[in-house]
Length: 590
Image (cartoon, rainbow, N blue to C red; front, top):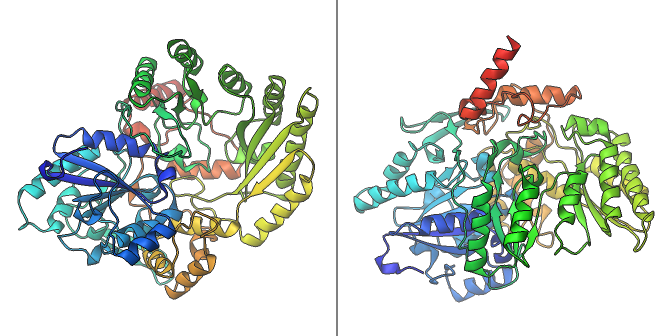
């Protein structure tokens, strides 16, 4: 808690979902601790109130306020949104509205807070460009401190200097995108034509910020006052993944892999326990079992901190992961989670998830033999080149896994199968691919229901309508701002929650805006088509993505560059280790 009147810069970190969701997000405590460590900066939090509270606040004329000091959001200098999922976009608008701040950036004046946004979703910032003053592209730990310097200078010059001058200045900072400083033009057929800077300070291409060395972990997070989704301490042990799954946006946009040293992790866990009293700590990474020496780290943590429960999310599908989790003596053997993603080896090769059926069955057998009573298995439907045989392959693979469990003594095996719809995402090799239509997806759901109708197997699936909207918002251009605004005006909020998702609202919003969701989601795009996010440089080159696209449709895998030759994805331009490896590869080929 800081003195409001004695602090020069006041920032509200906003998460566009419920408290129990937002307090489980790792970005929030990292930025909270980083910014509050600045003597002249005050940072407080705000989350989206549920619909009943939002209604009550509006009736009573109470503006949305921060949790720490209860100051209205409109009194802060900066409001920063964390955007990690497209279906939270209408909540951003609702937060601004509840705070009595104009929703459209063009309607805000110098008296209103500066509205910024970061997170994985803003790697295509265009759909939210009408509402955000500027976006932070990539890792935020370094760029936010540079932004603070710019804000200090701007605020120090007094009220005579307009906000537009601040936006022009921050546009020169690497990794900052100010959409109001760019002119977007479209062709007659609706395709993007160009995105052009209107001032010299704005760069034609916005490069993603990458921190080469992971900053110190957050070890003094605010402890939630109610039970939240992930109610435990979290230490990020590794950032990035180089396995190259072609459907996975995170695996592309968080490259390169950066590992936190073991001793730093051990010390951070101790500080987290001391500061917050947690008895469970999660070791977070996109692929935790890929952390070199993860078994040694787990052993060291168990020896150093007795009675500490260790959580290992995002494990690779292999017997090593099962043995690793089994070594956690404090964990009850109730269930393990793995993600083959596809039911056939052919389709796993297409998506570059090169796990064989023998390996999957061996992993399942190892889990059952070690006493695990259930497995949760994730698959996707609608993947590129998917056939009926691939869908039936899911049923056949799950049936084999269930049969392995029936051979073990004790409780009957429980296999939960979760099927999501493949959503093509920007900056991935499948960014040009069309999403499968609802009718075809429903037919595949019916096929799975028939194939998995047996005791001990439980199937759940995703509504294709939700996936269609997610794909349209993911791959949309700036015109979608009108759609988002109209959907919100029609009453859409909490679109990520099934009980509040209103598909008719969104169809009406698209129609009122003269657009169609299928134009963005259901259309195969030529490889040379201008993309709405082409001005955002995440470090992965278009040439690499096209090579991976072609390899996918030729059924060719691409090895992990940490263990085999460099794949020349583009990050060798920025990473010294990659440059050296590519030079050695080039010399060996010569």
